[in-house]
Figure 1: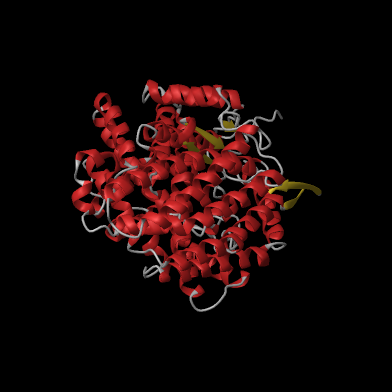
Figure 2 (figure 1 turned 90 degrees about the horizontal axis):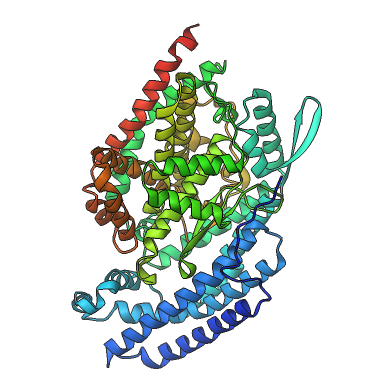
Length: 595
């Protein structure tokens, strides 16, 4: 299989190149100057506006450098977790930023606590920085003393950051032995994920059993990673004055608790429909007690088509064009210019992600393509993130970071575009397979994401009392899955190790990175309904919404689209669209089951 790596030369030719080394030194020099300026000037509010403009310029220059250096290191490391240079420079840059963190915290407090900041923000000359200043004011409420901020920042390098790297390293190098037809084959965890999509039931079950056995080789170590990270987060968020990690997550997400509660209420209300789908799928596959977890991604129907990477490219571009030429051109640019690291291999991280890189106004995507429909949808999803980047790049660099809930909106919207376009063109036989494939994804985003939320909430609560070992984490995960999937799943086959290979659990700065996926799906469904009502006028409106995600709270972004996300009825209306597909699936398979 041809190796297709993403091209990082627009960032730097190599770690040894003069360009990288010069920028690394430049970053160190600016950070030192930045620290000295803050120590000298942020003691009183004399000539505040002059100081503010200088601090903003520092922030812009530092953001530009960091957002060029860090992606190069991180993307290199993601493609090869054993790359010694990437690991070395990751640690070096993290240490540089950790050393500057106390100064950054001091600047945040200095600006955020300025008595007349609200009046200043309303002036036209600060219009492009208004939300940036608003967020500094909010962050200042949770800043600790300079000494405490420095201690936390430095300790994290040998604490949560190190634990996270260990989890990534152990899972990326884990080998899984699968026994099938008396033959033993070895796979990576990523490759096992692909086997779980196999049309052969014995292959799926063997892959699941092999994965369960392999996880037991590293579960104690990974449990210590997770328990340590969550323990650190609990300690730090309470120091900062948050009630818990969820409150901090909502704050970082620019989302109110009312919005989250409304969405969760609707999700719980619609779980019975997803369970009906799962039970019907179990009947089709000849399962008696609900669907075993290894059959979640079993294909239903006669769509057995696989895609070469070239076919996937043409397929995506064609269907993106049904929405807009701009979206199709973005995809073509990504394919033609090697923005994507395509195939799985040993040492490469699993899953998929997109990295928006502001300094070069391009994105880079990592995926693990194996040729099935799900892989094609994954690329479409990540290209949605890249399209979001294209829109957000038009903002000032300090207004180019969007929060987690809306981070999944453009990506999920692109999935909807592709799936709806191909379903409309499908034969009846293909339509069943396509609808079922989409329901697989939607069930994962509603039921699995809900189970992850329940799991993480319980882990944080218990970690306040004691460290957690693998057995306790398995018990919590098993119960979370039962609460979410109910009788839709066979409780004899539940992946109690589902926490072990989900990287989102292992970021101290991204607690509860699960519910935003549900938000993205359901918010995108609501936006897509608007698109169908006004196709010509929606595209520019949509781009404006995406640009706004960098400089507004989530509720205000939604208002731009005429949506009230604090109203449970909005979330119900989006779930109704998924319910219709479930009902169609039940109708299409009714005769199959009766016979």
